[in-house]
Image 1 (tube, rainbow, N blue to C red):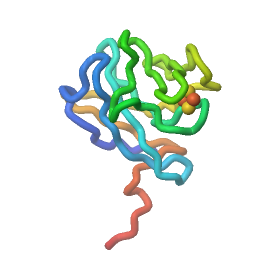
Image 2 (cartoon, protein in one colour; image 1 turned 180 degrees about the vertical axis):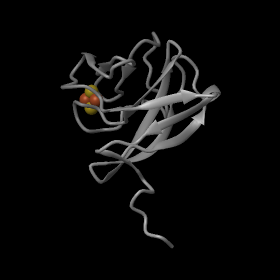
Image 3 (cartoon, helix red, strand yellow; image 1 turned 90 degrees about the vertical axis):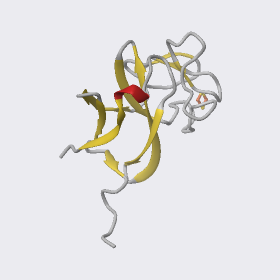
Image 4 (cartoon, rainbow, N blue to C red; image 1 turned 180 degrees about the horizontal axis):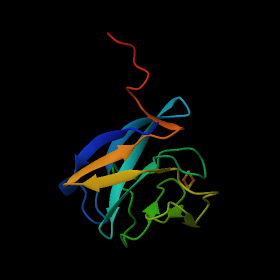
Amino acid sequence: MSEAIYLCASSALLDSGSAVAFEVRYSAQPLRAFAVRYQGKVYAYLNRCSHVPMEMDYQPNQFFDLTGHWLMCATHGAMYSPQTGQCRMGPCRSSLVKIEITEVNHQVHWHTSALIESTTHHDRPT
Ligand code: FES
């Protein structure tokens, strides 16, 4: 069952600006993810290039190329569509893994799915 998890205030995400990072579990592995705003809408993906499974940001939370229209992997320059995560240019092999996002009342939430869970989901009670 999907769960909505608070990520940030809407004002933290500017068009083609810095990302907001968050942690998820993907197929039971801890991984980083990121959300960006592009042309007014928020999108989120696992921070994992489809070329080699490495994190993509060239500086912390910087994913957009100089044009502000593509998400770029710093390692070998793969370019992805911010709206779909699809590979557009470079050595990428497939799409980024997308994470569902909702933005309501100036708040951004990400949504868990069958493969993508909250990092606190399996934590044992203390
Ligand atoms: S690891 Fe991302 S382009 Fe090669």
